[in-house]
Amino acid sequence: MYRNGRVMQARTCALALAVLPMWVGACLAQESSIDPVLREKIDAQGRRIDAMRSRMAEQLAELEQMKRELAAQEIQYNDLRQAIGLNALEQARGGSSALSDPRAQANPAQEPPPAPPPGAPQAPGSAPVVATQPVGRRPEQDERPPEVAPIFDQPGVLTPRGKLILEPSYQYGYSSSDRVALVGYTVIPAILIGLVDVRQVKTTTQTGAVAFRYGLTNRMELEVRVPYVDTHTDTISREIFTGTAQDRLFTTSGKGLGDIEATLRYQINDGGADKPYYIGWFRAKSRTGRDPFEVTSDCVTRCVENFTGTGLPLRSPTGTGFYSAQLGVTWLYPSDPVVFFGNLSYLHNFERKNVSRNVLGAGQQFLGDVKAGDIADISIGMGLSLNEKASISIGYDQAFVGRTTQNDHPLPASARSTLASLLVGGSYRFNDKETLNVTLGVGITRDTPDTTITVRVPITL
Image 1: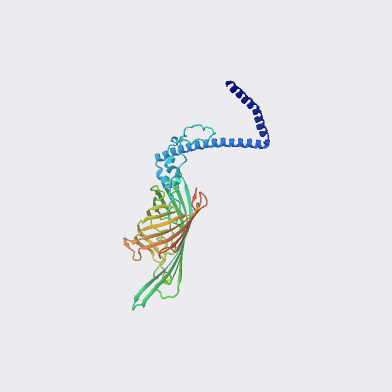
Image 2: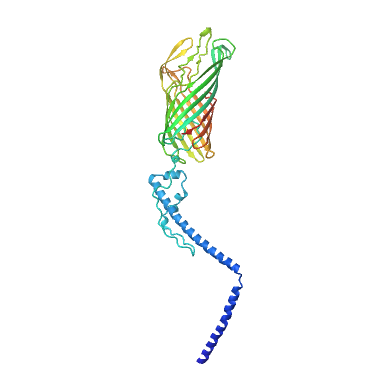
């Protein structure tokens, strides 16, 4: 039996040895039937896939390294901002999603990097990069109020430290008023015995000025403004105290240097989004212009050639005739997409002692101590930026003028008055150094000029 097993095993091995060459030959014959060109394409495609996998693995490793370095820099940057107290500014400007996300503020070293795909080379380990300096530099304008089209005399954006701004400007103003004076008495209602003085006064004023603004610090600036005034007044009336029925035109004009003024402005606080900016300012005005007491006035009673006069100045003044000091505050409140702003100020006119005037045909007339009324002013407006260069503003300005006193007594013809104007303005920035500002003012009350147009061109030197 054992011998028979040995015989069967030997026969099986002999049969396998006989079949093996036949199977190998069949495989070789089947392989040789494949087209060599197709085989080459398959091999090339395989090599390209292997190369792409290798490059993808390398790029994934570089991307993970860059993510770790960026996270380390953001943590360093956030620590520096907390150290110098800039978090309030970041919140005011909307913040950064990377800094506001707690996951971005976590230490990236504690998060294991994702495993590379199979077959990719192992990325070399490296320690996070620690920045030795703050990332970037804080823009200077972050501390400054937003720019809007200026429609008031006091700008909201101060001049940066060490910068000089030259601002030429031109202002055209026109006003007209009618006055009716009844001199006599009435016998019965609607019947007047006496004289009626009717006057129409039309005044045109053109003012060209040059303002120099210099930034003492990033929060303080000094401005000096030098105006040149050209004014023309037409008065249509009938000769007073006479029975003539003919209208007469009385024209006066004058031009020359106006009242030079200087203004000091200081930004009080750091504002931001939904936080107001406050700018305090103080303005001092001289009386370098020709004041009303220097010009010669026409006579009122019989004078030259036995005719009565108008009592009006024969030459228009170019200044107010009083030294003035004005204290005020400007506020701006950004509320995307608009900016609300306004002014609140008080102007004090200093009293003049021993004032006299010259009257035609009567010589010098002594007036004594004269003080012009003080002025309280309030204004409010709203600005909207259309794009990075153009913006528009609309506002309302109202001033309360007190009575003029002579020798500590109010003048009989002096009364309190209210000046109110509706202002519309636009601004266009040509470049970083030149801007065009245009403002249109429309008078609302009777004492306010009917129309005022102002053009300014600030130029940064």
